[in-house]
Image (cartoon, rainbow, N blue to C red):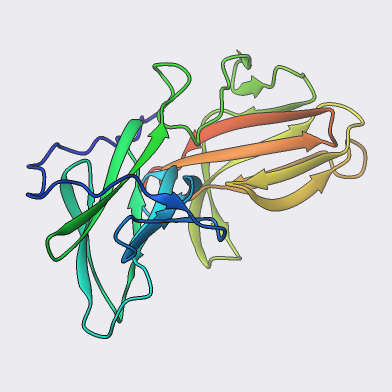
Length: 233
């Protein structure tokens, strides 16, 4: 499995002392001490266009004036320019503690986000712990034993996207009602009798497949979709 890299090279810190710690707003964002910038209250998981599931935040200008502009940086490296016309930027976080800054003129507001992973091999905090899963031949079995998934992706035409994509098959190993999702998006439901398995198409990067049995258990599988495309024989 490819390990996605979210490391960001350290750059020179922008000249100017960071403004005081931001205050929490009631809308799920933090407003900087200057009152001119904001960032998300906390990171969330989303689909990076190349790396798959990864943590990110939004940051930018807060109620900007018509000519306002600024620079958004991650760990000292500029990642986006923001203006009144386009005031928001998506910032993909590295594993560990991240410093996000938004500079407007000579003022810099700083925000800290902890995206520390639970164990060294975990690519990022959006990838679940599947170390309890077991393997037998070409199948990976969840710790609950309620489901299993093929290990090596195949290639098939996806009628929903109109192109060939890598996929794996997910199996219901009993009479379980399993709600299947891919990258937090509901896909289908298996019941172990009339619907015992389903293909799961993969996008680029790391994909998270889940099979939830009500509130009793949730099985997870992680598959690398490569570039998200493939060539049919």
